[in-house]
Image (cartoon, rainbow, N blue to C red):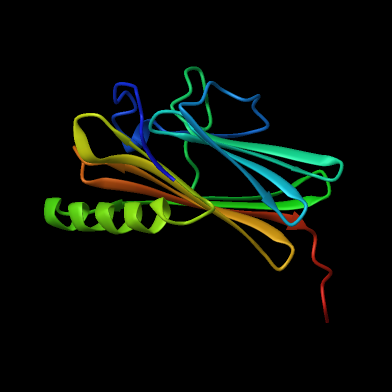
Length: 172
């Protein structure tokens, strides 16, 4: 699903993004509710940032990547931790692209997410390449999602990937 977000573009630097687990739902500009084999997933666009809410059986988790006033947790390169009975893994990277490469990558990502049944993307008024996009799936008992946060004025694309699921037993 592709939508135009009815807001000004306020998160204007990739470096301003922060990461948090366990935050309450924040006001969203666009929402996609998904059912992925027993898992209820809500993808939420919060301006140039995102929030994912996951519920499965008796467990729940929320991930937020956004400009969060007062947050002391910058966007990490990687996180691996237990969340209840789940294993949670998060990774982020920043791609810096030339203006021409950025425009091509933006069009490619928006086309990928816009037509996907588990995808949500929002573009901002004023720039066709200013967007936030999210794509979710269930694979081998885990719920996974990827996000892209575009900052065309900097030529930067923040890419995140998350997977969460039951602990897998170690096989020796």
